[in-house]
Image: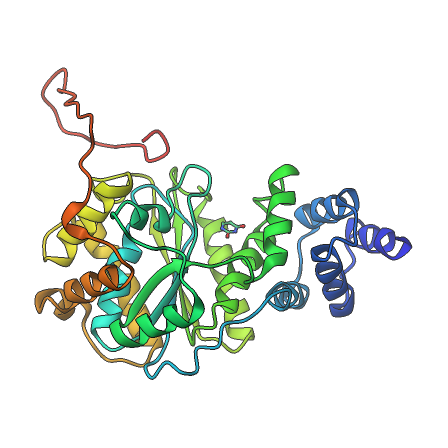
Length: 342
Ligand code: URA
């Protein structure tokens, strides 16, 4: 208890915490040995004072160690994971993962459900009748080895300390702390065990971060965390002022991803999926052009094979039961669509 008071006071006064202090706090809190009021005070001190690179590395490592780290050593191809910080209409994973898989990478993508105003990749896939998002590790590894990509739930045993700390951050207005965000995202990605990580950091009215400078700092912090942990990591910063593409919602986004995989679809989705998959291929050491995987139909086949392997039936994607056309009150050109409002 005294130790915890000293830790809070040190951070409150702007002093750095030792690696040992940081690891002790994260593991003791995740075991329920530190009361929420003390942990909350430390989070607020971190919100104002930050964590330096070495404190942050220790914090993230301790979060990874709070659970298990997936062993992907039996996958024969180079593995690469992809993460988005979340946006409106963001179906990029549904396109980029099969592109990378079609060109020789293995993408064991662990995803989450919706967070705040942004939809989750798992919710989108769950709109496909029969699609299973919860897979046992062995089945997940079998699918990724056979098909090249799998998108499933992260499961509660990866970085469980993040779950406890995230709930506390939500309750204490400290979600927006950049180091806490970076360690939350990267602890889950590092626990996923992939050989490389590509981050799509969204910036704009529909993203968690609206300020490009903040988004750049978050991206740089996460890239450093990945690289410091020995996992090559790259980030792209992409605009999230308007919804990505023309569909926002679960089944409609799966349909739009299929359109892109068939060689059509909106330009902005194509552009972001191309940029993200190009980074995934580069980090996997594969010299290939994402456009070839679309043109040849190989990316579409990889997506269909993944959905089938996870029990989904793309032929019976639901249609919206209610539809309404909103006619424009006068002629003109749509200049802006606010993502957050959508
Ligand atoms: N996503 C996460 O997983 N954690 C954060 O802190 C923010 C977004």
